[in-house]
Length: 345
Ligand code: SF4
Image (cartoon, rainbow, N blue to C red):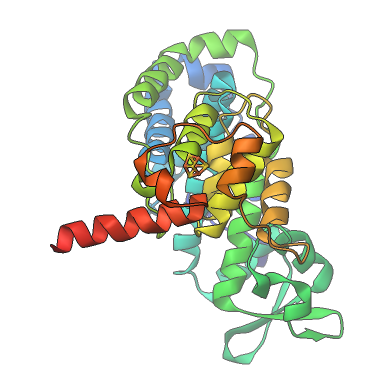
């Protein structure tokens, strides 16, 4: 990378997942064992802890520091965070961290000038040509590779303007693509192969996080959008509880749960996060399955009726309201209506 293309360390500190950040850290010549065992680097470990707990509570924050030492400290904390997460080997937490990191980066990218945005994008393998009125062109192959994991219809290549092999895209959508790339980059290679020795030296961190997780497990707020968990029918609430307990659910339950959540408007990321507790969790496979049910292949699947749920043994916890409906979606809507009108009267 030439001097004109290089990104300053103060900027890298807010995008620590970039390859340029990894190169910068390499040149610092500081060993992992040194960081994890020497009291001199205590503040780096603390920053990692703050980032992981921030991801758990939805408060992860990266602000640009003018001070180089402080920026380097932020940079160094990123690989340590990945090691702590790898030692814990909790896919749910790793997924949550990746989402928090990509959302925070997206917030910061919105403040960047176009040239800086281009530099960051290049690092993430998205090469753009900036045109007037804030429109960008990116090669269709790069577009497809990145946008395929976003479910909304507008991201399909057929719904984009294609000009000589390039897709036209506005600034806001470009940042959304970058957010997707960042999430993939953060998850790439996770969990890392961390030695027992390093995991032992990080044990006080992993134990602290486990305590925080057990305290907040009930309070973890999913990005539900307009979705209200209190209106879920008993069968869906039961399926969610089973997944969250780390128990594998049957194919029919998984289909019923996913199609229900997709239909009521839960985001793909939030559903992936939910399934991340499953013992056989595979982020990419799960994303593909959810997007398929959401209609990426042209067919949008609706959740099964109560009769079908009962046939497959998925009608669990039936209550009085269930006697008045024939479909789990009707339960959700009716419960919502009842609750809203209860509060009004
Ligand atoms: S009756 Fe319908 S909504 Fe109620 S638990 Fe059974 S499947 Fe779910």
